[in-house]
Image (cartoon, rainbow, N blue to C red; front, side, top):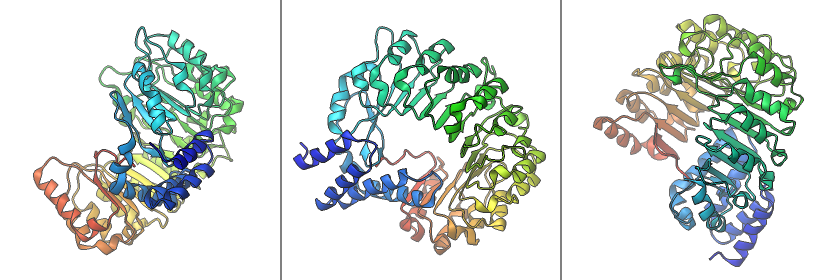
Length: 495
């Protein structure tokens, strides 16, 4: 049973979940009780939540939390009840507030026990099975709801839309639900969802209809993040696409939507927009965007994405984060990116599996005038050694987080270790099919070259000798100094 004072402080947080003040008061109490690390987690996560994903201070806060979690997570999470069909998520803003439920029956059965144990405000569960329904009372107080899987009962949408308990929701995610347009239109028109600031409709078969339904609903006027995504060409398999995607018509309606002026983040990944970007980028209504994700557009690696509209973007558009991963571009397209005024303030660029066809395209991208401003870079296509050599030569002074990948090449990390760029990095991730002993040896021999590195993710391989190489590095001076060391594919460390 919780200490009466602790319960009083937790109740104060529960009464005002968006405010930092009650959480900071709780952190002070934890410190007074000798639980300094738990107190620091609350403070660090609150500070990180105020910062954009690319911010260096936010990265340090995240690493601090992971370091404390490495040492204490098991003890901290011991108070969470072990319930069949319930999987607890990570700690956010100081409390474990997320849980995934196997089905709606499990949700109804265990939600009270979960709420008694922690500040449950973020739930993931599937749509109801035949003969079952979403328990409205259990939705009370939620800030985020994710519904997964196929929608078997269209009437479940009407039931959800009628739930007044959704009025506290700020985030709604509909994942692979196979919603028909009529169902989505009824849901987004619900007056109880008028407070949403984030809506994500992923793996959607609706295409333009999803955009039309949203705009015509007239209710979601406070959105700051919108995602309408589907599977890209490279993910569909041999049968190809059997549904529409968002097109120029949908983008035209979105660009003319008055409420779109409040959008700051937009994800249209997987939609075939390669010829429709002009409508999106030239819109004055969408000029407030700072984050844009356009992964898997057009024809994947077989058809070059047209990037020339970036040059003619609206004069007020200033992107801070851009994700163009898993697309194919030609030299003209890369040149358009390099010359785009809307990227002058770009600080985060993700171009993993960006197929350019030749080394000259890589060189042209790295030579872009805005490249020096990058703080976070994710590259992973073609020759990673060439990317590394170009980065070392350009040496962007503000880069603190780097992800490298591509086909296996020996010497990638060794090249980085010999350069001044290594001393800037706080986080480094390397995707490859194998862990090269030459690279690991170079890092072991030059630990001071990575003087600021706190988080390192190395390739994973099933070969026994590479496991031995990894364990040897873990025991090295640099390996021991790191706050977080893991391999690609390791389960996340939950604070």
